[in-house]
Image (cartoon, rainbow, N blue to C red; front, side, top):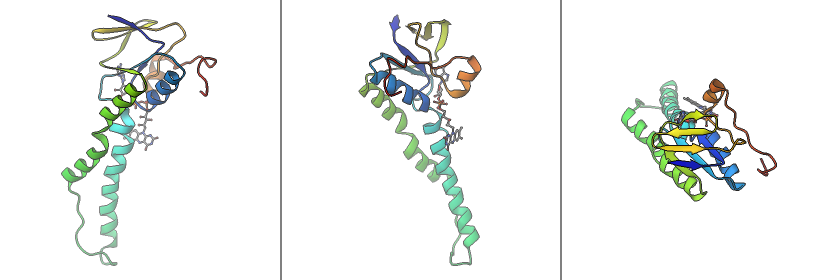
Length: 160
Ligand SMILES: Cc1cc2nc3c(=O)[nH]c(=O)nc-3n(C[C@H](O)[C@H](O)[C@H](O)COP(=O)(O)OP(=O)(O)OC[C@H]3O[C@@H](n4cnc5c(N)ncnc54)[C@H](O)[C@@H]3O)c2cc1C
């Protein structure tokens, strides 16, 4: 099966959300692919997760520093409870992201994407072709590693 898109975004992180939404709003057909649950590093494993976990550690640290200075009792971390709290932020992310893509008319696919030709991307059982102008947004590190660039036609995409 081969499907044609103006833009195929590999990865569903922060970069993908911005790029895919703006390009879709300009009328392009867009697909987003990820081999992990949708949302990317920041929302699922990076920024938000670390803020919650560090907040717990900071709270205990502060309570210990203030003991005998108006604070009594032993503060301690319950890791199961802290992880459960963290999951209240991260667990809803994949479904919320997929719903938002659907609302914007962006198709989502699960699987590992790979180029089989300059304008052809495959995930297992699905193949995509891209017009020559379209390029690809990856996670930052991969974009640098592969030399691929995300590029759009500025005349076609307003308010870029
Ligand atoms: C612990 C930690 C804490 C962080 N804290 C902050 C912070 O406080 N503030 C901040 O600004 N930044 C923070 N960052 C950095 C931030 O997470 C990244 O800058 C951001 O996530 C990059 O977004 P991205 O869309 O480029 O890539 P990512 O969000 O990494 O998304 C890339 C996606 O591509 C998918 N993918 C890769 N290859 C393929 C493939 N071949 N096929 C299908 N899917 C593929 C991956 O599964 C992934 O979901 C933190 C990072 C970490 C690790």
